[in-house]
Image (cartoon, rainbow, N blue to C red; front, side):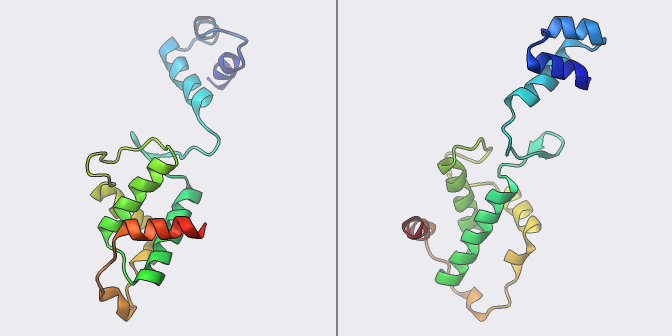
Length: 147
């Protein structure tokens, strides 16, 4: 399979010829070759089944950094703020995402899994954490001015 995909991606053979030569279904070869051909180098990898990560590891680290800054300067971040931040970050970076465009925020499942991947955000031992979170737009514009 790897040799057939390499032959197609390099342009040495077409799909039909490579499928016949290597005894592989043409549709399978097309699917595998298109994954390699159109995948960007820093593209996030699928985790399970048909679900795909929206952000790369470095982008998630950036999000975690923003959230920690929000907590540091504005004393509290709600799940809703994280969902809005994720949507805005995906839009600003022109990422393909499954987030709700009408609500302009990521889904509950996404934020739950994001917090599982980043448990340091769940540490709420600080006494300030009980305060009301601020508006995300204020923070985002503040962070844009800093960078």
